[in-house]
Amino acid sequence: MYFLDEHAHTPEVVDGEGRQGVWIAGDGRADILVRCEWPIDHLAITALSPVQTTFIVSMGSGESRVALEPGSLQH
Image (cartoon, rainbow, N blue to C red):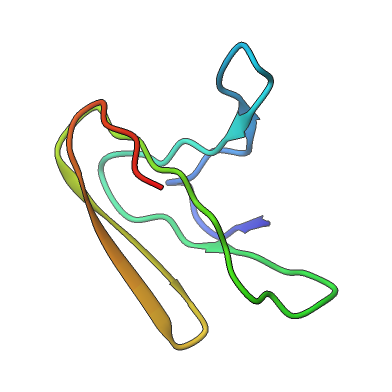
């Protein structure tokens, strides 16, 4: 992953089970480039926000928009 602006923070452990996450600043959007040695067929993302917001992710020609409610995990 390449972080293209100052709105995303590098991955860090986010829970007691050792899972890593990326924090996105709430004052803007973050552009993150995902690069892989093989074609990416699908991507699984879990999103959580302390405030109501819309999470938008796009890869290739596809885009997904998910409404996030405070404290509710979305997969």
